[in-house]
Image (tube, rainbow, N blue to C red; front, side, top):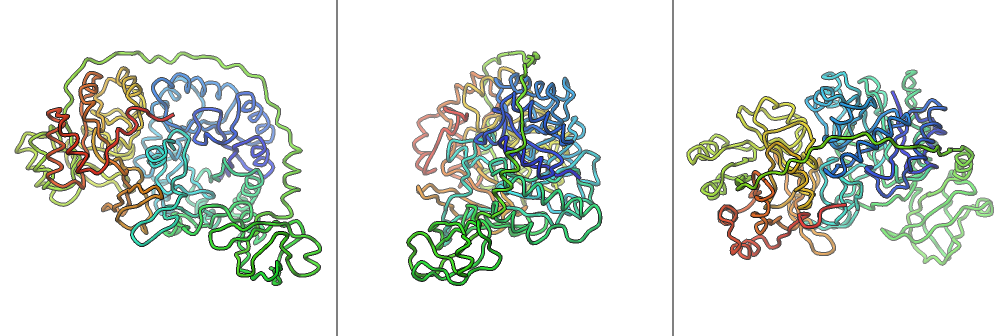
Length: 639
């Protein structure tokens, strides 16, 4: 079983090798999900592959962002370059880039966790489409992972250490819509690490602990997992070294049948290197939140009392050169280094003014860290001159003819359905009770009825209908023999995306010109989300209450639970593209989708009628009822 370590810089890459990683994953200057890491130039990538291979270590390169139509050829050329320099695999999110790679190149493809695969159906789809390894969603339990392993021979990989996204990977639009920086484009602003209020609760309500799944290794080994992965391309080389060493040694011990996988000292060092609180993750438990603080505080030594700048109760296990930091509640007071004089006196004398009182004491540096850093610096990585070839990627432009878009609505109640029916061509009905009644109502009016599957479904629901709206590649694979409609959660960014469907919503992150480019190359029907609250997050957190989440600026984000136990967070304003319906028709958009779920019946009728008639005079009335409206990314897009 491989241990994969992260490298966001050359120093971290060297640290991963010294730590004993079997493989290292890293990104270049474009198309990687960690845009703000140092990352690697072409020459550095080539040198990194050379160094790793000389040490028997593999290199996997991330191309794990969504790719716009205009970027497809550059992304494909980049992957061809990675093949030329000898990279061992490429990690991909975009399902439009996938067929170009598997059809024309030999480099193995690993499906990024950003692809959102979380069921046996999804893994089988990956195998059928030339993917050699799937990095599974972090929300899966060990039992679910085991079930998936039994259904496919494709390689499986799971995260075992590091940051845990609050939202299902590849489904988070919070940073994009609330902060203008898209996580799907590698620029996440980490809104989950900020403060919010929800009812009587306040604090870091969306902040998760880091996963520390060392204890899961024996069972993962027994299941037949191919790789265990450490998160942390934005973290220090020392962290990378310690994580790689601890997990590599643990895997080897587990393979030998040893019971103790890591010493207390190993665990402490890893805790000091980065620690915002730990959880064994959804693999082994349900509680994954850490809402006290979102930052790394190192290893907690305990609460201490200070009097006249002296902490007299010296914690055990300290050594000269250890670094300590004091906190009072959520406030960082300051830090200092332990000296030999302090150890001899058996007291810590704070070198800066410190009020008398009680503090939390954390160890944030270990005396071994300088020697680790020195060892890392002694290893050389020599960039290698390279030249990119430029293979041609055929993407013929075929501009569409203007058309009158159909009107589709997403609804979740019979009352809203009845009010909207006179104005629509199609209904996507959220799976719930009284499905047959809803279907009969639609058929009586000559309106197409399409069940809307859940956003996330570890167990995909059974439906008998001829047409189905799917929200994941897993669901699309399960119902491939039906007439498929795709939700915007499928992240349709370019015209090459697979699987093909009868009709799919374009990504809500595309600007108008990017949408036009997609349409000019796409031969299937395309729908555009034109009204409603965009879902910013879908999460497995059972502790998030229903209600309204408020950020410090006063924006309000509705939160609700679905019947599968997932929590959803919606945007603070309704998307509203009523004034652009004629423009969208001229582009060749086939259908406009109006999300009327959780809207009252009168509102549903008002919106559906306004869009059917293109009645701009209704915009102000709709805005009053919505409270706030937005054009989303239609006018500006994401970088």
